[in-house]
Length: 585
Image (cartoon, rainbow, N blue to C red; front, side, top):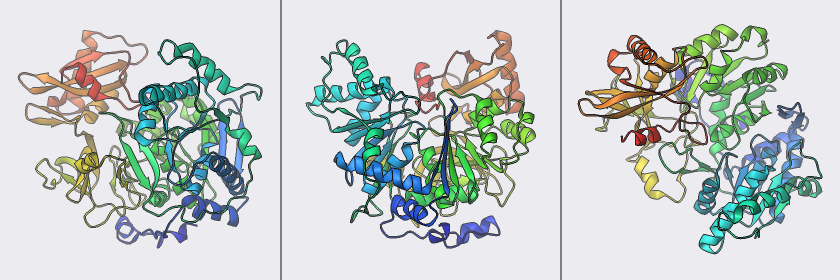
């Protein structure tokens, strides 16, 4: 399969890779028809998906299973009136149904909008209105379904109408067939409708039982004529909103091909192997590691469906199912290294990756010591595919984002627009005047002004600050809005946070700047203490001295505040902007 889309796959060096790797983009490419259907026809019994949950349920699906279920899902959606270009939101957590429903939308040419189950009613209202969503398919969580009901009613009350015309739920493996999630959701909504001034429950759009309808639907489907062009919108992702309202990132139908590099040269997946990326399907990380590049490269996708993260339980399933390649955010690795890693058999595990937030070198070293596996850090955004990476042709540099991916013309620019010299800090930009990377977004949906504010003069400005060493490796400093300017110095929060997290008392922390009459800005550390530690003036001084010794003395936090929690987005990213707002910054 992979040979159909790339010129060659074997490269002798990083330089060879950058110069000679290229993607062959077919006309009117559609992943569901051109990859998944081809895999089902050519290797129907090959393993495609392995699913399990924290209660012990397990299931394995072949490409023929996926083909059949996705066709049934497509027929259900088509019968509900979903067609080319229709925006459909999927709130399916880590349920198996995500894969056939997503592929069903691809087969119909509809626009998929993956979303997290952690959305509030306000979040759902915003998304329905911003994208004119016509259908929502979600898990059978009555509270979530009640939020959808409330969102629909709120919009109808405000505008007199709502774009939503279809709602469906998928049943949990553990939901008794006699239970009706829609009735439970209606009852929950009715309890609060009066207090919300929404009146008695009266759903304009009834809930459909997606599983029951799929089981009755035909499992054959013909490819619709003119189902898509490469430039049509295939996916919309709402960003996590660390600095403001979430942006709508629009990806076209070529996007899956951009993740060939992600799977083949970063995750280093194996044909016939099993890859596990830890991500809720509501986030773009699922597209990076749970379907596109992995299937093109011939590996099966592993899914562990859980509600509460327990490091020992996750390590157990990784070992028991003989996962070959694994990707997770550094936060999870931080939990892993606190376990007794010597009791696990990691012989099947070949490659491990970290992404989603900067990787602390200490985590790298301790994980390597405990497992014998290094961690390859990679960098990208919802707007991009794999942009920087510690590729397999060189030893990884702990704490570095790596070097630019093939197809990406990456530069660092100073505030005056000039390129940075070695060691200088600047904003990471993607130059697109000569070429646009395969898989890069088309812009922010319905917001040309916002698109032009970050993508102009032949370059896309990521908003991330980094420095580049003499060998071309990039080192993350912080978001441009988060960099602290104090007494003429530019201080990146990540380096200070990394230093603090090396101290045993620090469970989690966020570093921000606060107004200071003498320095312009002063460094502040907001700290959650680990179990067994108590806040004190002595501990504050100890942390300050620790940072002075670990980094440059001028970077130490002059203000240390101990808190019980940090403000975060629904994706778990720290909202430093909220901390700054509370400090009047």
